[in-house]
Length: 450
Ligand code: FCB
Image (cartoon, rainbow, N blue to C red; front, side, top):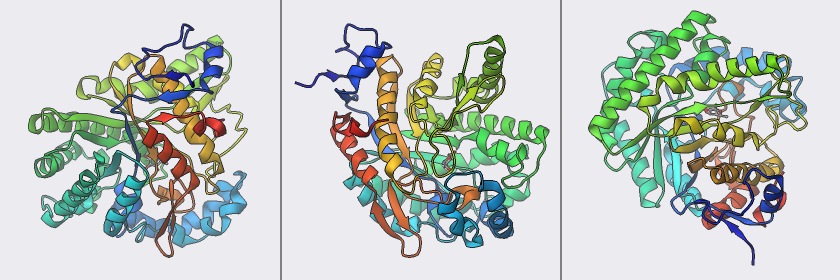
């Protein structure tokens, strides 16, 4: 008989869950999750819908030539460069266009998600469709998202609704977007409208996706629209996003008191190579500024933590000392186990955690087939160690537009042929489906774990 380790930890072995023996043993056993665990994948409106009209679509058109020209310089270091050179040097790659045409094909996509045994799905509402000009709300577009929610619910898939995944209506971008002191007011009005119209039956809301990533790329790196490199503007943007979240939290609670509300927070696992004094200081600074600052400021305005996790950062008298033994297509280090540390470090918030994004760009799908069971066994290990994890959304359901990188990074469980819009579930999608269906990682699923 195959021993089982349950989510509740009631069948815990007599060994300390941190012990190496238990971890080795656990690779041979079935790892079960709690019976109401949410399993699914995530998308965002601009990355999949197609035919949007927002600050990003405008920026893409203005910057596609430049991005194509700079791609060689930006990516020559990447071991996979040859594989995507043709796409990356083509300006068309950077134009969102019709994307996955998910706006029209959502039924087909949700049929696939259902056939893959997902019981939850995270998606975002496109603000620029809902409020194309200031104060004018488009009822037809609200109806579109009503259909999306209905289509999910009809298939037994729990909608996890993100209100803002980075793109702005043009009128708001012109007013300064995130750095406008009116941002929280506008976001609150939009939130109120959506929750009043669509909130009935929605249990989970994510107000903002990765506020720190979007504001730092726009105002610290100066790489994303509106490309204004100025640390003061970054701080201003972050403060406005925090206050936008708090206001929206209060508004949603007022309209829908039982709804669960959070942020999708980008957390990095900062690891010390050696426990030296300097490394301790560097880790404390990095953890405070990147991981904790924002979460501390919204501590009393969140019911759960949405964890978006993609990387670790090794500290050794400096940052980014990762060995990078294996790299994904984007050149990011392949290290699925780092989600364990990210989860453990969230324990002090004493809130349930939903993993709202975790995934890799891998057009070959070979790494992804190892990534999913390895990441999920790290999640299970965290659960055994007392972390209250309640769901996992793989990023992403579909191949899609990876922001300023365009279409070549392939994150999807489902491959999309952008010429024909044909969808093909990858082997990893089937492997993940097995896990979702069984609500457990079986020993067979874990053969590829690494
Ligand atoms: C996250 C974003 C998501 C996607 C993944 C790869 O930071 O939230 O939209 O681009 O990275």
